[in-house]
Length: 341
Image 1 (tube, one colour):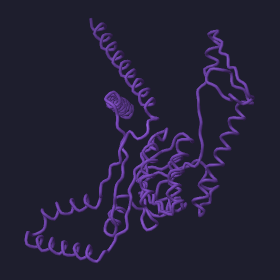
Image 2 (cartoon, one colour; image 1 turned 180 degrees about the horizontal axis):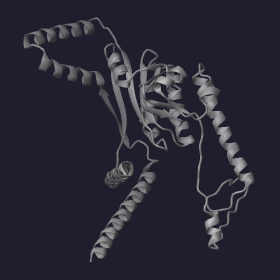
Image 3 (cartoon, rainbow, N blue to C red; image 1 turned 90 degrees about the horizontal axis):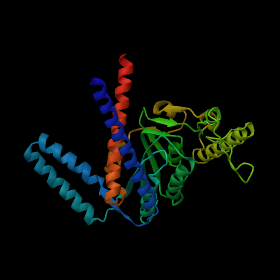
Image 4 (cartoon, rainbow, N blue to C red; image 1 turned 90 degrees about the vertical axis):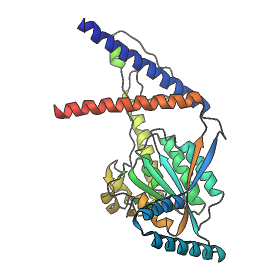
């Protein structure tokens, strides 16, 4: 009976996992189908000065004497009135976020945000990008980097803040900024290219399974998962990687001319403290610190382009999030067990 109970529990878990995977696949298909729709979202704008002000005022209410606080509020109101009367203008800082996955899918929002900024921004303003990405597909991050080039070509100062990681394609984006700010232990670099894929040809051959690959063009297919790979195909694949790496190096060198590119383009990564010595970054500072400083002298606006999602899409995203968290929790427990064992 104990065996049957264990088997039933295993079967229930398996069915649940299969159903969850099907939900995710259906959702991904739905998202891909709707990805080409334009104008299906809206731009959200938040003035960050108000956010910082509200936090300061809340803290002052708890710490400062009421009479002193009242007098301080009067002085602030008077100063604001005089500044408005004198026509004093403050520069503007447009804050964008890029949280990159392997496909650089956040570029779909970034392209709209950059377009919106460039309708108003001037060389007296600034764009600050809070960037977090460990890199991914070349074409996706190439497009994301091109969006930042638009800002730089428009003559608008661009500052990139890295609090955790900007590696590989992430650093390809970061290098476009006139200033790169990094937290002391953020991860930067990985100026390299990698590709990997399994090959099950010998397994298929062992079980007498034939797999035919028909191509037109000598290098239409170099390495495959199911077919037999040749040395000539491997050499061509490696040549393609080397070509991509060379383009990557040249791109970084164009925007970070102070770099010793051959020294840092080895695929290695460095923490912020070491990256500063390599001149991969310009200053050690978190985005919070930098934006708080800028808020004293400029008006800060956080921009986010939000896509409108249908009910099935929202359901699917919620389901995929739950599954992802469940898998990560399971892996965490497994690692924990391995550690303590």
